[in-house]
Image: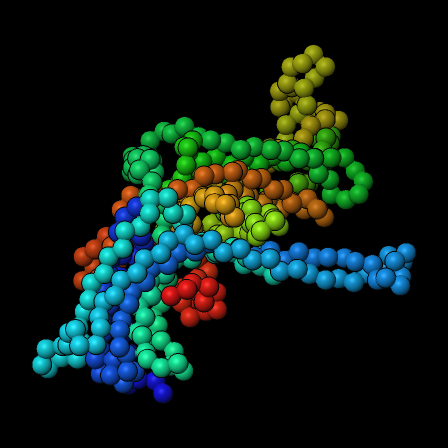
Length: 422
């Protein structure tokens, strides 16, 4: 039977914690619930663990039909690896030690654990055949006597990131860029491809360019400007044929006219190892949709332009000298400019888990298989060196959004958290 009031409540003073810094909080005991549950002691524990899982598929011919490739058994092997990262324990209360003052049912006990400086960030990825987690949690455990009485446990998952002194300076630089709209050196990733409308016909050219500030790393929770430029060059056609194209009909290949037509996202590229078995999955982490934040946004999609090819002499013909049979191409351009923010676990690498990131742009062009993909690898860091205060009811503290982690990470009662031995 559940107690009438929760006997144990855990409160943390920070919403994001930093490796090498203390974790501080308090455990509140309600002695009405303590007596109902017959709790004799209350311990507080900090645990950290890296856990991986890789499913290895086996294809084995059946003994009686070894020569027939259709007769194959499909088996699988499950491989797990569990690496402890941190362990801290403290006894807060024993029956008979202390009781609330008259007129009160509660006592509060503060706790403090010092984190190691080299801890990886909180992290969780899961698919059918691969899983990787870096789990941290504070647990308050009420010890109950008796063989068949389970202990009362309250587990609070933690968001932990590495300390990042260099990222603090980068954050300040990005804030300056945003506030004064100053010129900044850009890092640019560019590529082009040849596409055509169907199986036959002449090829057209498409080019996509992604630019962000040229920095060694990109911290969390700060505006990072970006520019996406798209250009298409049609197959060669005569001016007379170009003039026959209606003004409101785009030439092939048409460029996106709105930001919503393309996809700009962050994806992770991981290495997961469990014992001797490895896998390298990828996953979409976040999509930078227009309107998802209050970032300023500009779009520039000028009218298409017909450009004549160079003459035999190498000089470009003037527009007034172009005849109906003059060959040329349609040039179409689109530029989208705004900013994005990151809130995912920073880039990290451990013995069994490695997580790298890349910005990815997908631009759809008409025709089957003509979507254009461009990736830009980036390093993500925390950009902080001290824990971030939790927001109080009066709004007096500095706040920071928590890490982008799956909802299952924050469910301290889920099965995966059972690997933490309290």
